[in-house]
Each structure stands twice: as C-alpha cells, then as structure tokens.
Length: 174
Ligand SMILES: [Cu+2]
Image (cartoon, rainbow, N blue to C red; front, side, top):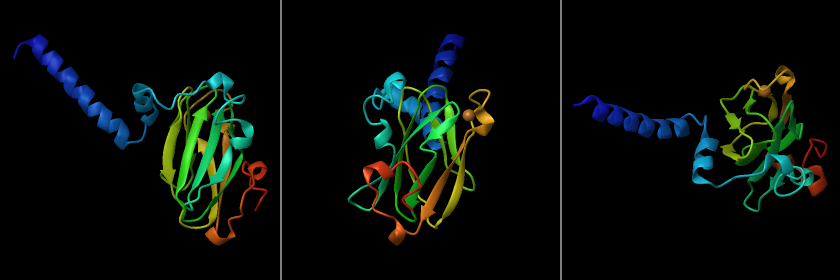
C-alpha cells in the first residue's frame, strides 16, 4: 500500500475507533452531543432563561418514580450545593457549565461526568442505598479547583419528600 493511502486508512480507522471509545468511557459524551448539534445551551444566559434558571435547579420528581437532577458547574462550585435523591430510583442527571470544563464525580462511586460550557451533559445514575456522598470536581478548572465540592444525600425512597419547586435546590426539605 502506498503511504498516502495508508495514511488515509489509518486516520479513518483512528477516527472510527475514537467515537465508540468516547462513548464507552463516558468521557466526552458532550463532544458527541456537540457534533450532533443538540443539547446546546448558551453559558452566558444560563441563569436568566431556559432550563437552568435558579428555581428549576435541583431534584425534580417524575411521574414514573424517577427523578431529574439539574445542576450547573461553575468556578468554583456546583449549584445547587446539596442535592437530595431517593435511594434506588433512577436519577437522570442534566448538568452544564457556566465557564470552564469541569468533571463531577461522586466519591465512593465510579460515576464521573464531564461538564463543558455550551452543552448539556446527560447521564443516568442510581444510588441503591441511603447515604451521603461528597461530590468533587476532578478536572483542573483554575485556582479554586481544589475547593470545588458539594454533597449528595440519598434518602430511603419512602422517606423522599414531595419536593416543591422552591425546595428542589437544597437538602433542607429532608
Ligand atoms: Cu475543577
């Protein structure tokens, strides 16, 4: 095979391997979304309009028993600071960044969600038993990165309160 042909072949093979690899490792799911053109969001107007306005953040109950959690990652905090979810229920996480690239991880689990400005990262989580998880940012995002922490509280499913809109964004309702 001539070199230019081989080069094209290798490049194509590399790209074809890269796409499933990013899916498998969950590392750059936002990249795929970016390529697909969906799930875009304007990082500059997050707090003003759309899905990520303040009173829409936090845990929302769905009719089928699952919950949707909406969060914003920004230098150097996660909003809301404390999240409440029911044990054993599917948790649909939707998170976006207001500035830099962040990575939301739940200590003691293998969950890691990369968060990029301009796109919504979406993932399914499940916490089978009640407990408390510290959440940290694992992507160096600037001077205050090491203080970028928050909390997730998992309560027994039957004790999970019916959250009103103003209570969604904190653990106070517990
Ligand atoms: Cu960080």
